[in-house]
Image (cartoon, rainbow, N blue to C red; front, top):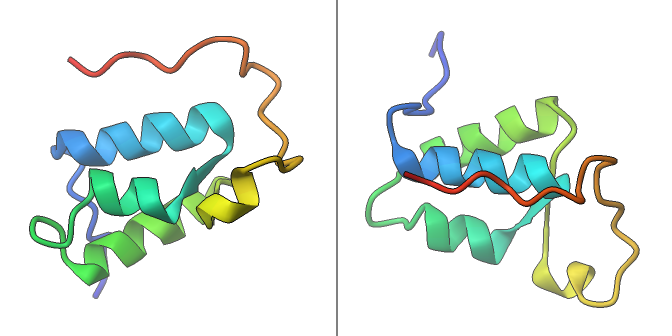
Length: 84
């Protein structure tokens, strides 16, 4: 397969990207909620994860976030943009 499988026209994909970019990470629970397996294939989810990793965004288990020291990006004092 030559190109990415991400459907950038999918608003759910953009929500994942915005949320992850704002915090520097996304939890697997959020990823599964925003990109449910009924609407997004496993290959597409894998591609989203790979693309996020390429720009330094990690996918983490929710347990890692609770009380953790996962750093937020320097501009994290601003909330993520709202979805339209």
